[in-house]
Length: 199
Image: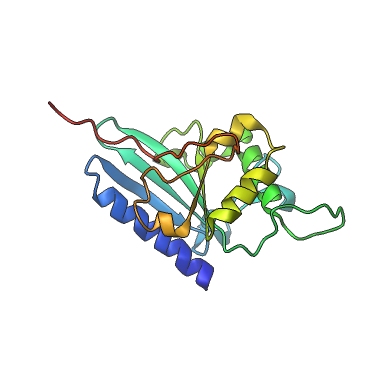
């Protein structure tokens, strides 16, 4: 329940941030706990697969997703959200451990990026050549631990990950509060470019 509430709070923060930027619009939001009909069955709204084979090993279920449009340029961007309550291990050294770790979750998102499966899943909303995973957690120390422990994941995908704390996300969600996955990258990034000032 706390996880669901925090996820909804993050989406509310997004809406407030967009309201302060008239050149932006939220095209659609998606929530993991909503059920939608696909074919003959009901599935979680954000569920998808990271490969053509629709197996349990290839399944991915983001906590939430949204599509943002710059109404001046008509450019759209796809974002996924993972709301972390610090209950999952970052990684494990035990080969027999069946508990999902954040490293496994990030590896699935890397596979999702490479597969381009999301382009088909979200094609009715636009053409997306990539997506950004937004990882929101409770403590800055956990962010740094995650960034340190993800050092062996492919660096070329680091730019598609943004991490911040829940407290910062509740401020200006689209502002310069986001860090990349790459530990050596010390910058903070906004999620969108600000509207060009006239004059």
